[in-house]
Image 1 (cartoon, one colour):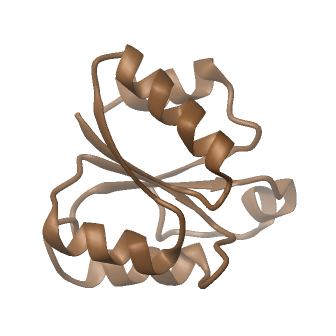
Image 2 (tube, rainbow, N blue to C red):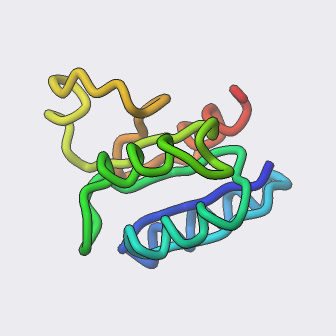
Length: 115
């Protein structure tokens, strides 16, 4: 699969890319909403792992923009967050799933294998 990881925490993103690569996937990286939208407008991704709290935007707004048009309107988009209350009480429906930070190897593998 071709994956996009979006997170301003560079160490987190590098770890996720290393895990995905070890499982045979290719990955691209963005560290903010603008970079994510630029990549998503020109490349197709099977899954996008999107941080909710980005320095320049809210991940929910980025998700909505990706879903509106372009080559990734049908991509599986997974929210990544460290806020347990967001996951438990948000009623969020824009995303296809959630990963709670810190993300474990097992949790990422489950999402990658479930496609």
